[in-house]
Amino acid sequence: MPKQYINPPGLSTSTAFTRILSVTAPAKLIYIAGQVPTDRESRPLHVGDIRAQYIAILDALTIQLKAAGAAWDDVVFRRTYTVDVPAFVQHCIQDELFPFPWSRERPSPSTLIGVTALANPAFLVELEIAAAIVD
Image (cartoon, rainbow, N blue to C red; front, side, top):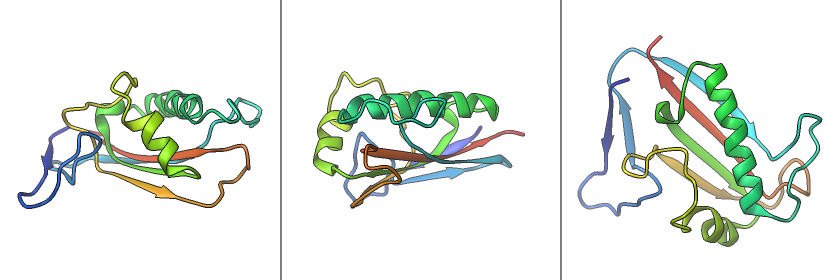
């Protein structure tokens, strides 16, 4: 899928996201609802461990992308909600050993939003994504 990654001059850059991602060809758009850290019975996983919850979310999203015929390289936007922004940044973004499923050289645009609560008090993080693929 042809994509153009743009970080305009005069703005800060980040290794965690790209400012603009432009899909430059016709595409099938895929929107995946907010994923929380749950098992198959919707029970919370890894209560109290934001990093383990985030990894469980990434694993679940990988399954969903595959079901839609996509992969992490096809993701064009990520939106993360967390009840603890400092812990998320420390344990899920800044750790160089963290297993990002997307490219560190060309990460999709991303928004991190601090919230007071998620759907279940045991959830520390939620992630929603959009992808674009050639249909």
